[in-house]
Image (cartoon, rainbow, N blue to C red; front, side):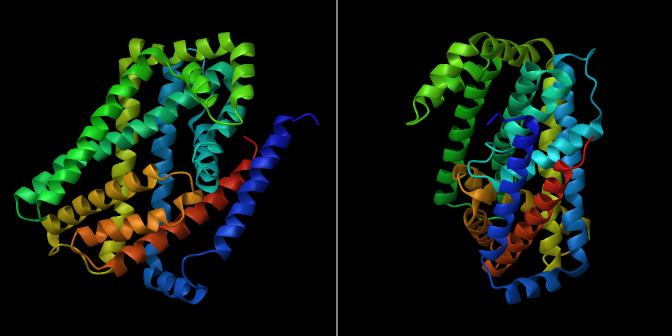
Length: 345
């Protein structure tokens, strides 16, 4: 059977629908408890869910900066189209094991209709690298945020805390070094060769390298070109992705305010609450990405929220509430993303 792009699109769509159905029937709490949590959230669900429209818009903007950075004079793409592909791509990432095995191939397939296979592949790989780099930047910067809050007596600082922060710092520095090498030399060719070391993929990797060696090297040259020739596009995209993580922290902040946690209220209290939300997001995403082979990081995200919120001196019940509402929000946006797959643009 010949696999057309439409058939692949339908495969992604039905896979996403199947995963959503499974997730709904394997929720971590009963439907009665789930309903109670939703009632507790009340009207706050609107900004909690709605803020992701802004987050995805920032993600789309960052991706479009990369696409135009590769060839600013020949990019027949609107922000609206990239916005749609951003939402559908993340929906598939959430719904498939090993985040990225669903969303990234789909984005390449759809984007290749506009700018060709090689430019589509290089821009998607570059954006995926930028998205991950923004996470590492967040994790590294929040080390200093925690130290600052500890210095003013807002958060505890123990030997155990120092060890954890030091390990995270070393982890991020190593990652920054690897990213710098990847941006200077590209990594598409090396990635395919590395995948060949996985049992069952050796034959596929060999065929890819044999048939598409020149195309893979061209993709790597385009990846290296953005970092080398267009520093502005590189740093603007990174800044936008980092901003998206900060905006995402507002989702957690809204839920803390639901429980009356506002660090005393007023401007200073709300500012501290926001900083706490950034720290909670940072720790949770770090844990979720370390164990990223489960659909939607089932169980990992919940545990991450409970642990990180408890570490901030708050009740584990707050962590459970935050994780459940975030899971509901993810399912809603997965459904939106899957619906957008069937909307032509």
